[in-house]
Length: 209
Image (cartoon, rainbow, N blue to C red; front, side, top):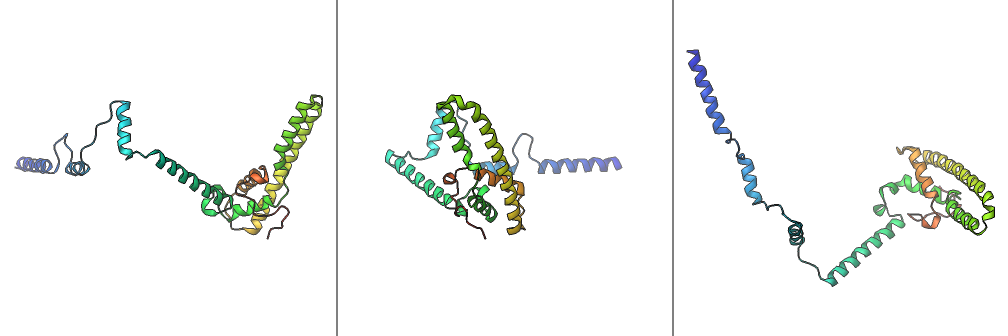
């Protein structure tokens, strides 16, 4: 008796499963409906020529030479405007590393200071030309370069410590790591003043509030 009940239950489950599940190897109704909505899928290109032809067809109508020239000019104009805004210190045009009041304050600290770091390239180039013109003084130039590098390293450490101290005073709630701000300051100080981006907003020697 119980065996008959079990067989009936198994048959009912099998029948229900057959009604609720699609046959093996066929898409479910949901996938089938999605495939109908998407439409037929184009076969993959067999050759490079077919791939190029497909890209051209998807790119839309081909622009004339004059239209391409105008498009390039407009792109250059947009890039020039963005660069000018970035050099002027516009927050919306700055790189991520330059954004925020703390980074602006660090730039002002560097720009208001007389930095030995920025003298490395001019001095190094000058010594190199002198050494090429007068090879006899090469013995004296090498120690001079070593002294210059040591002095620059000391100047960089002093600058980083100054930046950390002033940021702690002016922006005590800042969560930026002080050593990162120090590296940011040293990197800017190593660049010649006229080549810094964004441009300096304070005069050299100006006292910061």
